[in-house]
Length: 399
DNA sequence: TTAGGGTTAG
Image (cartoon, rainbow, N blue to C red; front, side, top):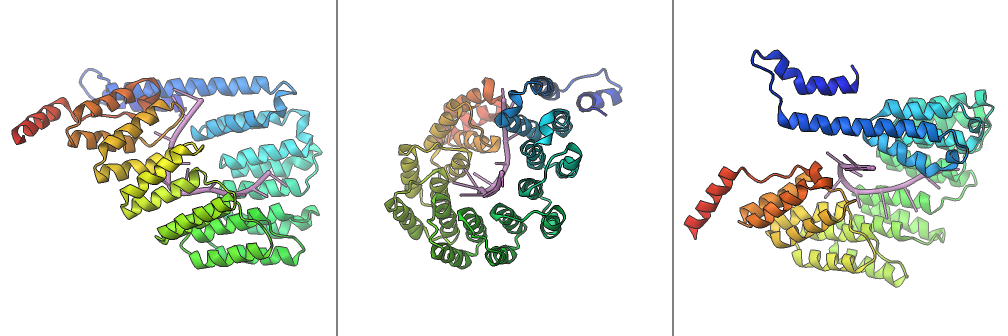
C-alpha cells in the first residue's frame, strides 16, 4: 500500500465500517491535509533534486546533498533517498572516489547501511579506486547506521583485501563504535593498538573517549584519559572541557564545574551553548533557581544561541518551581524565533502551569501564538472552556 | 572521510 493510500485509509477506515453516514474526524482530516502537503513538497524536492543533478556544477555542492537527504531521512522517506542517490550513479563522477564516498556517507547518515555497503562493493565496477578514504567511509556508515557489530570485522579483514593501511581516522571511527556500544575498555585498547602501529592519537581520539567516560558515569577513568591526553601535549579544546563539565555535573560537583569554566576561560577558551546547557542542567537538578538564572543570564550575554536543549531543561524546571512568569517569557522568545523547534509537550506544560496559577490570559496568549502559522505543529490546548469557567468560579469562590 | 546533549519541519 502506498503511503498516500495508507493515509486515506487511516482517515476513512472507521466511517466505512460503520452503518451511519460517513463522518470525518476533523482532527484526522487536518492531519491528513498536513501529511499530503508534506508529501507533495517532498516529492517536488526529489524531482527538483534529480533534475538539478544533471548539472555538473550542482553535483559539486555537497551541502545540498546533505540537507536534502537529511530532510528526507527525518521524514522517513527512505525510498526517495534511494531514488535520488541511485540516480547519481549514472554520472561519470561515480568513478571518482570522493563522489562514491559521499554516497556511502549519505546512506550511512540515513541509517541505510545496506545501500551504503552496496555502493562500496560496486566501486570496482565503476572503475573507482578504493583507498583508505572509502574504507573509512564504510566504517563511518556502520557507525552512523548503528551497525556497530560489523565494524570490528571490517576493520580486521578489509585492509588486507583492499591493500589499504588504516589511518588515524579509521581508528577514531572504530573507537567511536566501541564507545557507542558501551565497550569503553575495548575503545581504549584501540588507542594502544594505534600507537603500536605508529599512529598518534589526536584530539578527536581523546574527545571521543572523554565524552564516553565522563558521560557514562566513569569520571575517574575520564580523568585518566585526560591525563594521557595531556601527556601527549595535546591541548584540550572546548569540546574536551565540555565532556569533563558533563562529568562533573553528573557527579553533582557543581562548585568544581563552575571552577572548571573559570579555568578554561583563563586559558582563553569561551564557554559555548553546550557548556551553558550543562551548567544550567546541573543547577536545575540541584533545584537551585538562583544559579540557573545566573547562568542563563551569562548565556544571554554571550554570543551563543540558546537552543532546544536550553529550553527543554529550563521550562519543566520553572514549571516545577512555579516561576511561570519567566517560563511565559521564555515561551514567547521561542515563538519569536521562527527556526527553533522545541518539544510540544514542554510548551503544553507551561500552558497547563499558567492555567493552574490562574494566569489565564497568558495561557491563552501562548495557545494563540501556538496556532499561528509556523507553530501549529505544537497543537497547544487550553483545558475546555467549561473547565476554565469552573476554574474561574472556584477561584472566585476561594478569593 | 572521523568527536556534542534529553531530539519533531520547512
